[in-house]
Image (cartoon, rainbow, N blue to C red):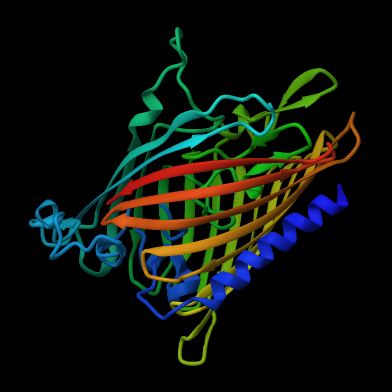
Length: 404
């Protein structure tokens, strides 16, 4: 098994070296803050990232494509496409549609299936200039209406919500903002791939999602970004979403949280830059707590503007003495061309339940973000899964992402 792990890691490092060797300076991709030096709120309405894009986030995406927007056979599709902001830049609209073709790691004869992952529409209303005063944000995941075959039960992850909505009050740009509603508490780094280990409890035979896509709780959160290099957030929330997460304990299911105690969250991120903003970095930590349930994370990254980004994430998930999981993720992304960004990610997860011995699994993912035309991303991936079982399990995945 050790030999298999070494071969897997060496191959991943080889891909990294090749990728870095061919990078050329091109337009930065806004979803990767390490490649352009912008913190999450530079491109998203939400301070923690994800969801509705502001006008800068939309504009930065709008021309990133292999097939050019202008002077090609697709030009007619975008003739009237000039902005995602309307009514004098007060109303912003957006869209994220995702699907993937995949096979399970945990059965050798698992069939290939196509999973509709997300079909979310967004809107944000900011009636005042510069984002001060009262603003509103909402989203609705149409794919959340899907039902299980021959059943009235909807297809969704524990804690996943079909809709989110919130109102934010910020008296001045350099003062804290308070947000209330049903939304995702700020913790960790917001990834768009919920198969990643930081969102999971992983062992040799399974991967249990702890924080599903579109997880949300009712609550309130205070955010501060008055300094250009700092993001700080604290919040208090309900428990209805986390209560749906269950752990096995001596043959019975135990909820991650129980009772009426609130869920507390805290997150702080620094965004230093060096050498005239050529070197970008972030470093931060967060905690999500409810009684004896905790998710603690530390994360850091460094990038060269328009060239390459390296990010690391450590997450601890703990539910009393029932389960403890430690996850480490390392990812290197290279910008070989503005619409083509190969990446390699190495993850290792260990988990231990009260009644079982400690188990571990490792994953190496080799893939690329390929923006074939404006607002259309293809993400081919080759995933190598390594556990205590003899040999490796490999799968290829293909994700389709349509956004606006």
